[in-house]
Image (cartoon, rainbow, N blue to C red; front, side, top):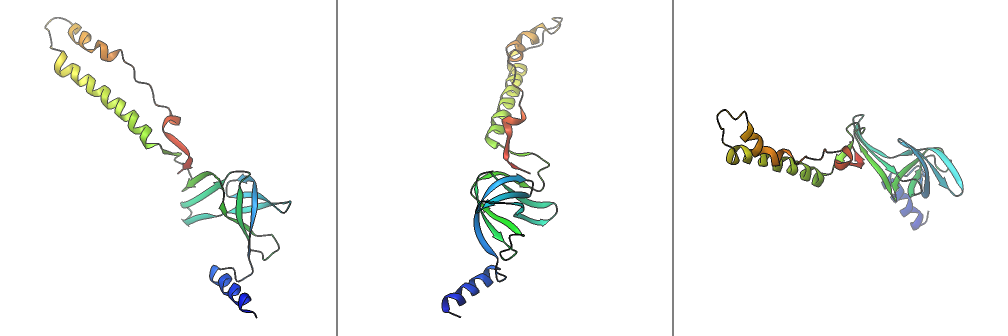
Length: 171
């Protein structure tokens, strides 16, 4: 065995490819949950697994590639192209953490803006009660209504889910 072959063998063994598994670049053709189809050398291979990081069934990370992006794949069937896994992708469509039941991550800057709007509005109402209004006997609340009129006339826009959610990463 030549020195070059010996070095290749040692590197493959260290990397876990002692069985002859090979790396290759392919194109993502379609994605369905943790399975995709790839095109390699003009042929389409179905049931290709996407790499998922996990510690148990509830602690997973699934990286969903964009269709049309390039992917680094490994053929674990030693050239038979029966057991293919996507290791890395050029472009990511979505990252799913722990099953994704809770929806997208929060856009924190947008959330802070919305919370600040509510806090400012409550502070304005507190000012009405603490400084602009004095109870007047027998007025039936007319003084309070007049003091709060400008505050009550300013409506707060209701927050929509899309305002605060980043669906590129779901958890």
